[in-house]
Length: 163
Image 1 (cartoon, rainbow, N blue to C red):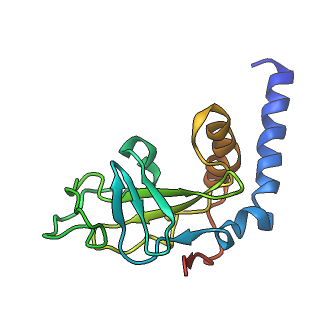
Image 2 (image 1 turned 90 degrees about the vertical axis):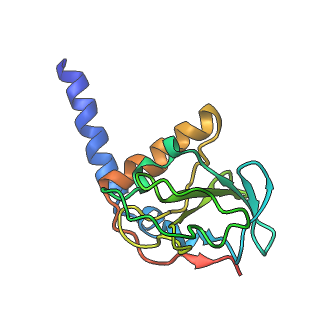
Image 3 (image 1 turned 90 degrees about the horizontal axis):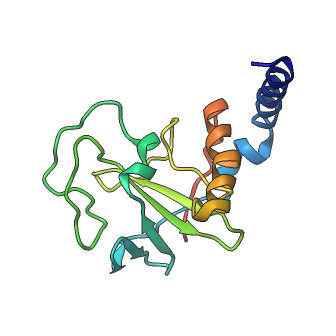
C-alpha cells in the first residue's frame, strides 16, 4: 500500500472511531420501534402490525449479523406472532423485519423463534439511518449503520414499542 493510501485508511479508521462515540450513533435506538402485537401477512414477505406499520421480512442473506453462533433447538410453534407461521431454520432462527420511515431510514426488529424481539447485545435490531434498498440506500446503510456497528455496538437500550 502506498503511503498516501495508508494515511487515508488510518484517517478513516480514526474518524469512524471518534464518530462512533457520538450520541447520534450510541442513541440510534431512540428512533427505533418494534412491531405492535401480531403481524398479519398482506403480501409475500410483507406484514402489517396492529398499528398499521408495514414490515418487510428480509432474506437470510440480509440477516447474517443477527443470528446466534450455534444452531438452536427446534421448538413446536415458532414465531407465534406471525399469522402465517414460518418454518424454523435452526441455523438461522432469527428473522429480520424492516419498516421504512419518513426519513429514508428504517426501523429494525429481530424476531426470535419464541416471538420476542432481540433488543440487547451486538446482534440486536437497531435503527437504520439508511434503509438498505437500492444502491444509494445500501451505501448509506453500510457507511452509517454497518461500519459504525462493528466499531462500537455499545448502544443505549432505548428501543420502544410501536404504541
